[in-house]
Length: 270
Picture (cartoon, rainbow, N blue to C red):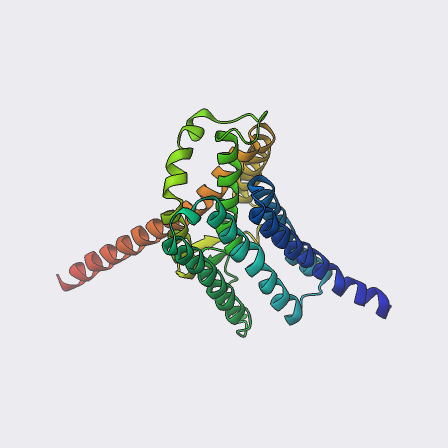
């Protein structure tokens, strides 16, 4: 069965290649001024990226080649493509400052992917539980926020018609448009930071919390069908904000533990 085994190894790489192709087509669409299509191709690249790793784990065909290939493709789809899209739509009116912001975003994406690869090559400690968080914002999430913003803004601008929208969110689109240069810098910082973000790789659907996650996923899917562009934007925005929530919760727990230890030490001194 050697030929079957080779076929299984090729299968995840086909999804990764789909990611790369989608990212490259997004760049072409953005250069040609077709921002809506460029954004959708980034969303498609995210779908391919979510699939290749799962296919590799399912078929037990994970490899160093696959990891390196995936990172190179991610740099194009989630680093270069969203930077070009934002430059063409927003940053090109800012001269050298706009170019610098786009470059910073791409460099941060490359740095994030390099750090991820280095960590993935570290020996696994079997005594430690598997982490269900990423250190720093994943590049697909930052690209997802940018592309989903473009999808919503295109509706606001009247470029795309006949889609249901959430009025409250649409009123905020001019604010997001004007703030996008700053948002891109924040995304760049988060990618190279140590802010924790959920990985959702080891979810066991029999656990109560996993059932809650599944229920939320069903709700979001229903909302996507009703308000497609707006809901995708909200999902990525909530995910990015979730990192700060986790930091606050961790900080609260640490302060609570320190306070408890101080009280215990005082009682011992008495």
